[in-house]
Structures are given as structure tokens and as C-alpha cells.
Image 1 (cartoon, rainbow, N blue to C red):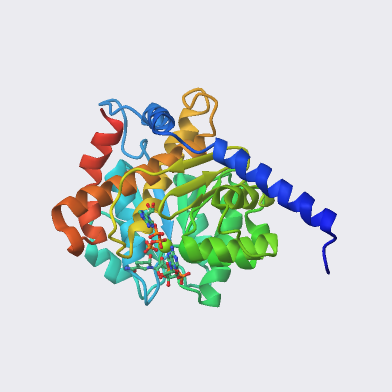
Image 2 (image 1 turned 45 degrees about the vertical axis):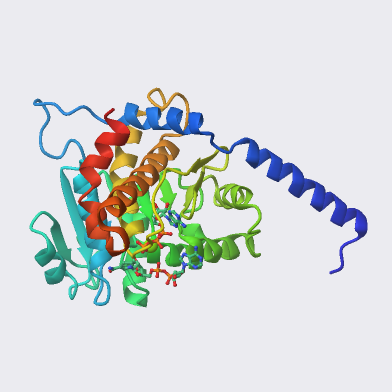
Length: 329
Ligand SMILES: NC(=O)C1=CN([C@@H]2O[C@H](COP(=O)(O)OP(=O)(O)OC[C@H]3O[C@@H](n4cnc5c(N)ncnc54)[C@H](O)[C@@H]3O)[C@@H](O)[C@H]2O)[C@@H](O)CC1
Ligand SMILES: Nc1ncnc2c1ncn2[C@@H]1O[C@H](COP(=O)(O)OP(=O)(O)OP(=O)(O)O)[C@@H](O)[C@H]1O
Ligand SMILES: [Mg+2]
């Protein structure tokens, strides 16, 4: 349908206003430092009176025949950031491989079983957060099971970070997370375009990344969205944050898995701390800002040592030092 000139002008005017609105929210270095302080506020103190599990029991749902690295990266990152226990719920073919990478992960070969939803549901009361999607693949049986796991998690009010092929599922069925206030989506460039197109029925305006993230979050009922990229743009439909922590130009696969695994723990910590500790800001946005900053700092530090040969394993080896530098200053 052709637009009347008046309608076109109104639309252009709206664009300018929206852009100005989102640009106002661009984070200055001072804002970045203030937000990092909020992340510091949500980190639970280490204490000799705590028992195993109190600082986080995280579940990663993903891992199939093709992809075993992604769920490993996410689950080990959760542990390295400070969770006490990290579970992986994966397809049976992936389980021995993931177990062999690390004795520190608890690996459940259940995702392709006919009773997958029940098997995972048994563990849900013991989990603080789920990270859904790293290395999940797009097999229909697995996706159907993950749909059931997401529904069961929502029914129990468990926070969920949705990444990678979990976002593929959400793009097919946005209703799955519509309005769920404890969901955080972490799309890369492609995943964001797919989601945006599915939910808003049109292409992303590449000149207006802030507005696009804001609109997607709003259209999903204020679900928190983290668009990863040269700068990470984060929104809960009300506020837009930008994370431009220095990283590097090295773009090896698996960095997003480090981010989603870290975020699983930080989401749990942020919700436990509550808005008093985040100065009224959304705890989930603060957690997401923390995970983005940490991932980029790991990338920066690993690149200093390894240059072009940097891999995600090198970044994971930097989690402890990067965490101290950003959050324990
Ligand atoms: N070692 C592993 O097991 C890994 C497995 N992975 C898994 O691989 C599966 C597919 O993930 P993909 O991320 O490939 O998802 P997609 O299949 O949606 O592909 C994303 C595509 O977007 C492209 N892209 C990324 N950023 C871009 C940008 N800024 N501009 C233009 N193009 C851009 C990438 O080159 C890639 O081809 C997921 O299950 C994921 O978890 C990845 O996490 C990487 C590591
Ligand atoms: N151009 C860039 N410059 C600097 N950092 C970037 C750039 N693109 C992505 N990143 C950072 O890399 C991390 C992972 O983002 P990326 O877009 O690679 O995710 P992904 O494609 O999901 O990764 P994965 O390979 O794990 O699936 C994020 O912390 C993001 O901030
Ligand atoms: Mg990814």
C-alpha cells in the first residue's frame, strides 16, 4: 500500500524522535562505571557459613551430536564465575563427550528421551536458573522437549537465559516467552534479525539498533533482550543500556556461550539481591550488563596473550582475573 506524504512524514518524524530518545540513553564511560558498580552490588559475599549450592545451581539445556563445545563453554563459565554446581541436560550422544571435557560438570543424557521433560522437571526445584540453547541444534524432537522444559520452568518461576538454538525455537513460537519477566534473550546479529522479523513482522532498521532492541523487548512484553555485537545493546523495553567494554577483534566461536553461561549465574544473583541493590534498575539488565562486560574483558585479556590464536578456552582461563578486575576492585 502506498503511503500518503503526510503519513510518510509522520513516520520519519517518529523515527527521528525515537532515535533521539535512544541516543539519549547511550551510556557514557561514567554511566558504564555506574552500572558496573551496580553489578558489584549484586555479587554475593564469599562466606564460610554458606553451604554448597547457595551461590548458584545452574542448568544448561543444550548439546547434541554436532555441538558439544557450546554447552560445555556455557556450563563451565557458570562455574568459573562463581556458581557452585553446573548441570548440562543434553542429547545422549553428546553426554560422554561433555563429561570427558570436564569432571566438574554434572551431565544428564536426557534431552532426546521420550521422558525428557519429566527427567529435567525432577531437577527444576534444585536449580536457580536455566540457560537454554547453546549447542541444542534444530532437531524437531529436541525442540519439542525444550518447549516442554521452558513451560515447566515458567510454571516454577525459574529464570531462563535463552541463547542460540533456543532463540530459533522462540522465533517459531514467541508466545513461549511472551511477557515472562524472568527471561533474558541473548541474540547475535543473525538471531536478532530472525527474532525481530518473527515478532515485529518486518526487517530490522540497521541504522537504529537501540530503537530495534527497545521495540523487540516491548513487543515481547518487556522481556530483557541483549543484542550482541561491536557494542552490546540491552533493553527491558523501558531502559536501553550499551556495553562497549574493550574486547578485541578476534571473533572465534563460543564467546556467546561464555556470555550466556555467565549470565545464568548473574541473573540468579541479581534476582536474589533485588532492586534495592541495583538502585531501582532492573536486576536482569544489571546482570546482563555484567555478563557482557565480563565476556568482553575475557576476550581483551586473552587477546593480549594469544593474539590471533585466541580461542574461547583461552577466554575461559581469564574469567577469574577478568572478574576481579571488573568487579572486585
Ligand atoms: N563449539 C561449539 O560447539 C559451538 C557451537 N555453536 C552452536 O552452533 C549453533 C549455531 O549457532 P550460530 O551462531 O552459528 O547461529 P546461526 O546458525 O543463526 O548463524 C549465525 C550466523 O550469523 C553470522 N553472523 C554472526 N554475527 C554476524 C554479524 N555481526 N554480521 C553478519 N553475520 C553475522 C555467523 O557467521 C553465522 O553464520 C548453536 O547451537 C550454537 O550454540 C556456537 O555456539 C559456536 C561454538
Ligand atoms: N564486532 C565485535 N566487536 C567486539 N566484540 C564483539 C563483536 N561482536 C561480538 N562481540 C562480543 O562477542 C561476544 C559474543 O558475541 P557473538 O556475536 O560472537 O555471539 P555468538 O555468535 O552467539 O557466539 P557463539 O559463537 O558463542 O555462538 C559478546 O560478548 C559480544 O559483545
Ligand atoms: Mg551463539
